[in-house]
Length: 107
Length: 118
Image (cartoon, rainbow over all chains, first blue to last red; front, side, top):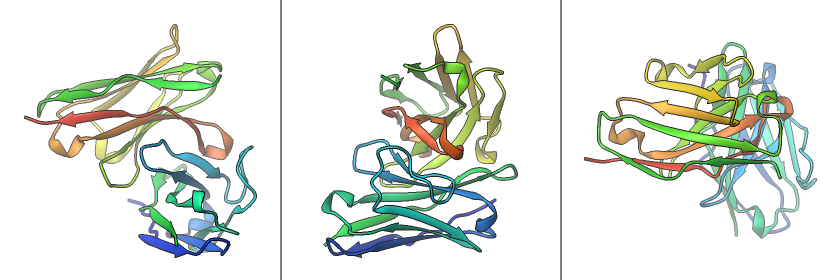
């Protein structure tokens, strides 16, 4: 089965840039989404189709996808960005797969 | 207001079944696929399956094949997820979510805690 691997944790100071990677075989050939989940809440879609932001998502969140890895970048990280982040990929052969998740800590 | 409202928490014994509902409001129920995702305490998100509410077509993650059924009642705009032969490993929060933007899950229910305990 298809697997997506993320680092368990990422730490960042306020105002700095946080990058979260999501690795999978030929991931660049699939569409990737990113979600943010805060404790006790449902996930929120941050990025779809690798780099597009839904309405209402701040511009400090951006995404890219190439080769075997996708990246979520949080520019000018804020304290409110402390959360768990999940990547997700889809294609016709694998259906939906979520990454292992990354806990972002704002120091 | 666009919402997915799920049924309340459930407690089941091992080997029992559970059926969780997900009621859509504020949009046309048959226009968007519904997926089910679960999350054990302290763990990551796990995709279970999808359904096209218009046609009733479904697809399931391989590990749940034969144990899960996703269905709907279009007259009341509600989707259901039934999981059978429960074990303690099925203790989790179960979410429904619609597929909208670019295969992303853009609308989520509030989650339903299912506890499996003898």
